[in-house]
Length: 249
Image (cartoon, rainbow, N blue to C red):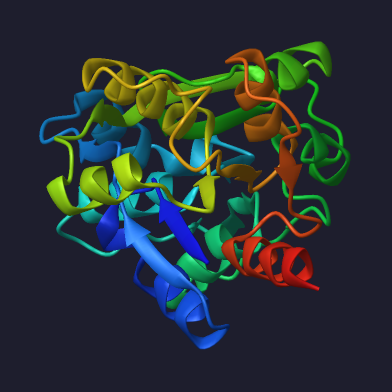
């Protein structure tokens, strides 16, 4: 089975290797690129006054990367005896933090933004820092505000359309078996990119199945017009591989 990977190629090596190990043929067709902001005065100010926040909530690996890589000096979440707590949505986000020497204080069992609030405790009057994409769902910030907290969103990166991968495009025109989506932005940019190539995203050659990493991405795919959209039980690329393995049974 040929599996189309739409997330950025530099973030998809492990996913592709897992697909190969499971007997699939991964096909790279990146539709988005992640660009951290080179200058970010708001982030620099927030980090300088980090002890004013009760929590820092990371919602993606991209957010972790942009937050830490923007700073030349190590970031301490403890100052003057006060510990700023860290939350991570998703196991990959938590692993990215751990790799940088930061152990998350809370990781919700369900890897979606809506699951974060119960673990943050009493937020009344508390400041919560949210490093995020330039365009993002405001689910977490709205939930924090509803709980009496003060959500401070700072955009640390932007998602831009990628240039089409010619090999991936050629494979898509011949026909693949499954198209995978890992975020709403991959859905949106895939549709736009395919339309520019004069293909109908809803009626592609070979009639591939659509597989999504989680419920938010699945909803985006369905809203784009895709039907019978599959979703991984575990909201990770490993979950997608398991889903694809079950398709073959």
